[in-house]
Image 1: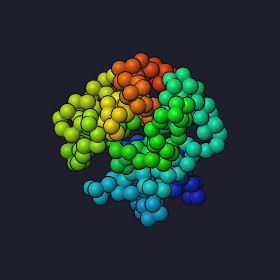
Image 2: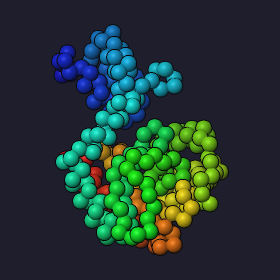
Image 3: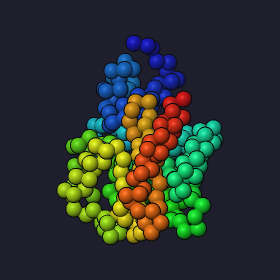
Length: 250
C-alpha cells in the first residue's frame, strides 16, 4: 500500500469518495489509504465541517457535500472542456434543429450545466443554472434509471409526485415502470410531463467508471416535433454523448 504524504491526505480522501460513487464510511476509504483509525476519522470530520463531505441520514456513511459538488461542476465548466463541449452541442443542435442541453444531478434536482439554443423563434426558455425535478423530466428520469433498485424505490416512495403538466406521472407504480423501461432502452423521454406542450429525449454521459455523471438531452414544442419523431434522433444523441464521455475521460 502506497504511503500517503501528510499534506495530501485530505485530497486522497476526496478522491476515494469520488471514485466510490456511493456513500462510504471512513473505514471503507481507509482500506485503500491505510491510515491510523483516529487520523481517518479526523480527516472526515474536517471535510464535513468544511462542507466537502456530508453525512447520510444513518450517521455512518458520507457522500459528496455541496462544496465538492460545486467543485466538480466548476471543473466540468472549465474553459478548455467547455470549448470542446460547446462544439459538440452546437453540432448536435444544428443536426436536430432543437435546443440541446447538458444537465448534472445535484441531490434532489437536475441542474442545467450547458445548452445551445435552437434557431427557431419559438423556443422553450430553460437557461443555464435552471433546476428541474427528477421524476418528470427526461434528464431526471435518465438519472433515476442509473440508481440501484432499492435507492430508486426509496426515492419514489418519499417524493411528492406533484402534477406539473398534463402528462406528469403521479402514480408511484407507473413511475417505477417508466424508469425501469428507461433503463432497458438506454434513453428517457418527457411527454409533456414537466411543461405543457414540451417533449424531450435524454441519454446518459458516463465517467471513466462507466457511471452516469451527467445527461445530454434536447427539448422541443410538440407542435413542431412529436415525441415519436423526436425518438428518431436518439442515435445522434448517443453519438454526441460518446464524444462528451471521451472529453471527460481525457
